Length: 160
Image (cartoon, rainbow, N blue to C red):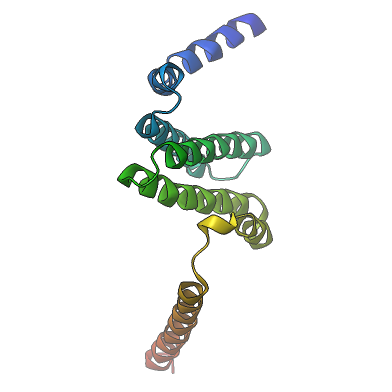
């Protein structure tokens, strides 16, 4: 029975859409667009994690492995396609992959784990301090607007 399951899993992995992309990358390891597509394929596989109702440790490890592979592929795409749209896209997808990693950690272990994931973002992918401050200010304003809207709804409710 175990042999059958192993063969079934191996067959699924070998027939995955990433197989063709891995073949392209193995043929030319400096093919930036192929690395970008490979990273996007692994990001899509990791997105399937969010379909679960309750996170399971094995699924979390699987999602982390897919996201780590995607990040490595995006890093290589940026390196081998410097100065092109492919490199710019790869950098954006790398940040998105870090966001997905934080989302997986948040679902599995709460906001503290998500914060730790964001703190692991490489310095080269961080926003300039001016934009970071702008984002913080916008979040603060949105929270204030949300509170004011909630207060208006409470005051307008028929029970008052």
